[in-house]
Image (cartoon, rainbow, N blue to C red; front, side, top):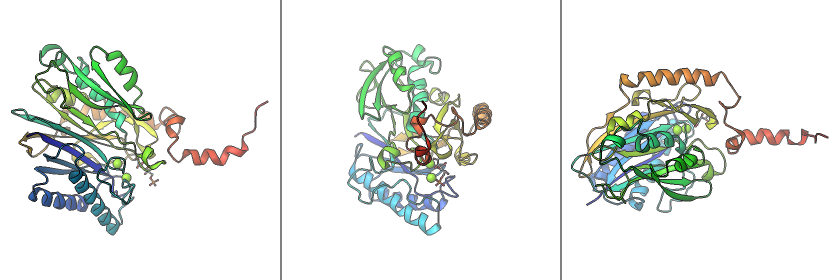
Length: 370
Ligand code: F6R
Ligand code: MG
Ligand code: MG
């Protein structure tokens, strides 16, 4: 029997502003998923948060896109929204963009990453959760883990990784996807995924030469774009990702190493600014300075027949202090630019923010230069 690992998340209200998830919402979600576990719909679950996003980490045997699992998540978010309204939390129900659930949460506001796979003898799985950024923020670290030998020593020295991996890249504007092999097509791959607001890594697969099944993803990223669904800015897409590790895949430490740069991502204040992605522990996953900076949390589990161990809060480690300090220097440097690019996003990325309204007001005052 295969196991499905799903992370489904939504911002259903912030505490205060867009900083954090209120503990009452976490408690509500825990209770709701505990009932689903008792009813055998879920094998196991863990509720977490990153910034103002409520994260449902679930294991089950229903496969990806399973209606019952999506319905459970949707109902949990709806009930959490009610709770958020009762408590007067900020932006209650922000990510629930439709009133009518139609069997799948895709395109309805929540973000999701799911993979179904045959468990190995020992199966380490890492749940990554980001706040105040967009799905393209995963391009850099996922590329580093699965394609860059300067990050992942296994690509050079472990025969079971040596052939590389296959990347599924989505063009989120044109709604198309393409499969690309690394290292053979690495330069073409980088040509696409460097444009991270348009081309995003959706999944990574082993090659057919691998001892792992080549059709079972070893990583998956949420690629929902809230602004494309909502038509106007309703918050960033705050993505999540799943990465399996070890035995023919990047080692846990190679997976985490990919986050040691504090790379620049877009999001942060009003979803309109570039800033460093800071890897933090759960207790520091609250967005404060200038509504940020963008953060990433990593929870590591071992799986056994779908059962989850307690998670390990993987960035809760002084080994990442250097990255955090560096991110803070970069944050300070970027902040000094105020409303100037490249701190503020370029015009084309501001299309779905509140800026066009300001530009519209100025429109009639522009006169042709003769
Ligand atoms: C970023 C984010 C926040 C808000 C900002 C303004 O993803 O959600 O930075 O954009 O706090 O929020 P409003 O417009 O709700 O006052
Ligand atoms: Mg929010
Ligand atoms: Mg958020």
